[in-house]
Image (cartoon, rainbow, N blue to C red):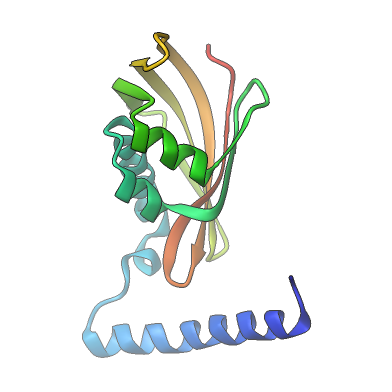
Length: 161
């Protein structure tokens, strides 16, 4: 439940992070990557996410997805983090391709805490129900910087092209 106390706690945590992390980084002589080039950080993270899905890498998927993650497909289906993790755990599909098409990835950064990734994705594989998939679709992924870590919070995909 969102309350004034929750809001003040979040503001306090954000303020502490804003004041402490740069000071820690300066004293260490380095700046966290998400402060140096957030677009490059998010681009790399989204590429790692696609590879994790391709390899049914539950640990990496779990690390990248926000707990409140949701994706909406072009046909209107909605999936949560737990849905995606269950598919990876059970290896519901085995992927030959789960790759962004070269040159299509575009990252847009909004302020200091939000970024979107848009790219054309090629998905090819077979699933445990006997179905196969070989399609290309556009997607937009939203990443939010939370507690110093970029998390994939929302995704939306087109219907296959």
